[in-house]
Amino acid sequence: KVVAVVQGGVTETTALLQERFDHIFFTGSPAIGKVIMTAAAKHLTPVTLELGGKCPVFVADDADVEQAAKDMAIKKWMNCGQTCIAPDYALMSTTMKPKFVEALKKAIEEIYSTDVKSSPMYSRLINQRHFDRVKSVLDRSTASVLI
Image (tube, rainbow, N blue to C red):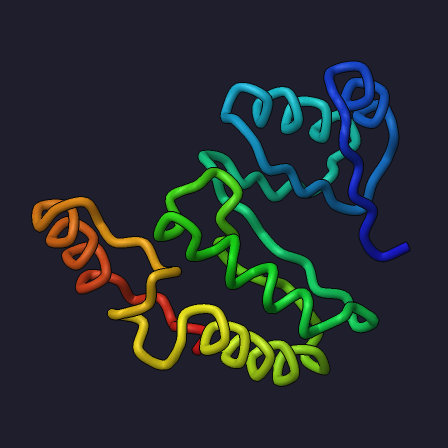
């Protein structure tokens, strides 16, 4: 397997951390991230910690690309992305990327229309102060944009 996703609580996580992995990718709290990092260090296992609410989306080459794009569009922009399950980025092969980008554009248009400002499906920031705060973060950003 290339990627294995395991869900569980303390018992499952504790058992998993006794095993050897090529790489551990963990999304969760800083406190549990420290536990993961400590356990990984025993085997010198590389770790990617997504702490503080980052949510990656994995899109496999055999995924239903239309459904994956629709699900991501809904979950990313539900409540303007202010949910703990809002995806922050998508990981996929270079083969899947162009298909996914096109499917995501289509899903966004279907869900929110071509005029997002008037779409009843898209949430708004609660007031001008919050709008200005988010805008200033975007203005300072150097990150590249998917679409």
